[in-house]
Structures are given as C-alpha cells and as structure tokens.
Amino acid sequence: MGEPTEIQQGDTMRAEAAHGGGSTTATAPPVRVPEGATRAARSRTAALRSRVREQRRSPARPRIWIELALIGVSYWLYSLVRNAVPEQESIAQKHARWIWDLEQNLGIAVERSINHAMDSVGWLITGMNYYYATLHFILTIGVLVWLYRSHPGRYAAARTVLFVTTLIALVGFYAFPLAPPRLMTDGNFIDTVQTHHTWGSFASGPAAHVSNMYAAMPSMHIGWSTWCGLTIFFLARRTWVRVLGLLYPAATLLVIVSTANHFWMDAVGGLVCLAVGYFAARWLYHEWVFRLPRVPARETAEVPITVPEQWSEPAVGTARR
Image: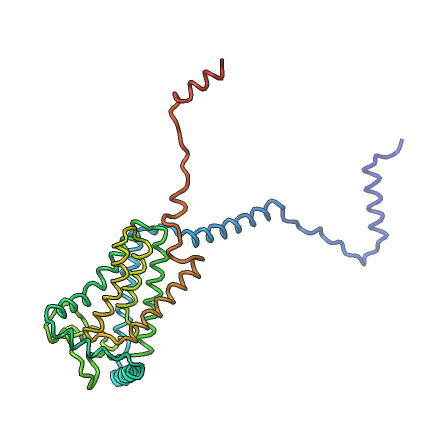
C-alpha cells in the first residue's frame, strides 16, 4: 500500500524547496482586503456624496435658535468691521468729488436738485428720514422670518445671498471710502436729519460718532431692499403684494437720494454686490434661489397610509368565498 496522498505532496514540496537553493527568498502572499469591505467603503462614500448633493439641491430647514444666533452674530460683526474701517476723510472727499464729476459728465447728477426739492416739503422729508433709519432693518428681518416660516426650503439659499452681499460690501467700505453727498465739501447738499431734527439715524447728529460716516459705497440700503423686493416678487402669491415688493427698492432709491445719504453710483454698487451674492448661492446650491423647492425634500417624504382593519374585512370575506 502506498503512502497517503497528503504525505506524498508534503514530501514533494519539501524536496523542491531543498533543491531550489538558498538564493530564493520565500515571499508571503499579498494580503487581500475582503471585497465586502471595499464595497462597503465605496457605498459609504457614495452615500455621503449623495447626501451632500441632496442638501445642496434641497437645503434643510435650519434650527431656529442657531439661525437667530447666526444672524445676531453676523450683524454684530458687520457693524464692528464697518465702523472699524478707517474713515480717511481726505480720501473719502476725493472719491466723492470724483463720483460727482463722473455723474455730471454722464448727465445724471440730479441728486442735489432732488435733495433740495424734497427738503422743501417738511412732512415728506421727515417721513423719509424715519424711513431711512428704520425700515431698512425692519423689513429685512420681516422677510427673513417670512421665508423661514413659509419657504423653509429656500431660506438657507436666500440668507446666503444676503450674507455674501454684505460681505462684499464690507470690502467696498474698506477699499473705497466715500463721503455721502450731505458731507461733501462745497457740495451744497442739505443734511435733512440735522435740518429737521429727526431721530433714529446713526448717519447724522450726535450719534454719528459711533458709525463710519464715510462707508457710502456700496449702498446696503439698495442691496438689502432689492433682495427683499425680489424675494417678495418671486415668492408672494398675491399680485398687489408682488407689486409692492418691486416698489420697495424703487422707493428706497428715492429716499437715499432725497436725504443726501448716497449718490446714484452707490446704488449701482449695491446692485453689483447683490448680483455676486445671487451667483454665489447659485454655485453653492446648483440652482437659483427662487427655483429651489419650497419645502425641503425630507419634510415632504411620503408617509405610509394606514387604513382601519375593518375596511379590509369585506375584501377578505369575499376572497374566502
């Protein structure tokens, strides 16, 4: 009887190893990662990418307390940075003269005429002073609250537009200090707040020392009001409300010129900043703000419908027959 097959194979392998000489070094077989682990890692990566893509195309509703803290801190930083920018009065006056000369060459330098005409109507210019000092903040906050409650899927993107617009404006305040028309040397503009003794504005009077008076370019009154107006126009349901949305930035433009707080060109600068904000949100969310879903996808997921058990009894009884 012969030896078992396993013993024969073992002897053969030892013999081959002995005849192979000591020059050949035995190499350990490569360690292979189980296909299941690789497949799981790839699936996790794909799931993460899919979740990020979903978040960008259908942003989730942010938590209210986080959002309030974010807006509060952002506005505080905005005010801090804006007022920390060196005023550079001589440069601001030089830029104001350059802007005024440019507008005269373009034939649009009518701010002074509007300023004097509106100042002659006491009740009207007083109302404009209060408009300039208060509505800028009240309506912007109101639109943010409305978006959060009624259009949560569009809120994060719309808020991003506002934040980017304001960030670009801070760069403008630092890079291009500009005296408003009412502070121009030999500009012959009327400072309507001082003339009519209205309250609430940090741009004139005793409170002017806590605000950077030479941060006029770009105009955030125009940037923010146009953001509010476009948001209302595209998302509101009633026609008259949409019309009011479009009239709001137009009225703001008349107010900032009548009160001699801005030139026309400051308004153009505010619109440019807003356009950058919209394009930034378009790049981030892969869609224009107002075309995003009104409600986040996760909040509109279908919920299984359950029916009372007795509803199905006739069908069961029929089947048994």
